[in-house]
Length: 180
Image 1 (tube, helix red, strand yellow):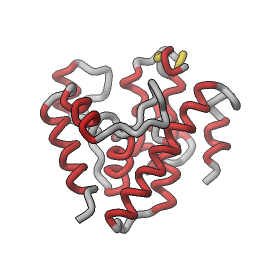
Image 2 (tube, helix red, strand yellow; image 1 turned 30 degrees about the horizontal axis):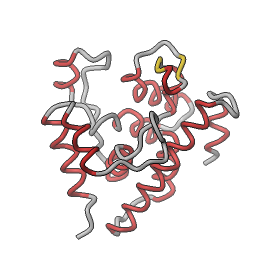
Image 3 (cartoon, helix red, strand yellow; image 1 turned 90 degrees about the horizontal axis):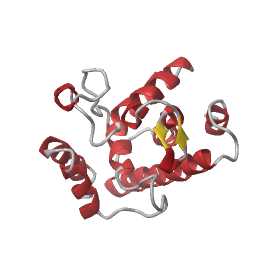
Image 4 (tube, helix red, strand yellow; image 1 turned 180 degrees about the vertical axis):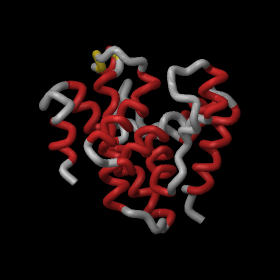
């Protein structure tokens, strides 16, 4: 898959936002494939690499100036937006990764209770590849140093902020992706 060609349809080549997206996404891809190797997972490695590089494509349309995003949509919608973008170009499997990677996934109940500007549907990773990318994504941030891998403790603290259900889903992902 020609990731750069896809991204260049949406992002200005050489822009700070594209550079940040590429750095973050490459770190997520590397982490996901490393975890897959350590756990000896039977996954579609090519899909994981490609989907990791595109999982945050929707940030271009969001408003988060601290990370160079100058769009109009709330940042929480970046997954849904990315999903729409990927479906438009015929990549429905990658669209699902975009939609389901936020936090440790979001349930319809959590979305409704928090009043989030998202459809009231479950947006939780389902396939092993979706779960792996969601998990790997939690270890890298686009704010601060995008190359710094967060500690497990820091990731867990971050998940706690979003409630017990979010933390428990992350801990299930961690158990799934801890070598035995």
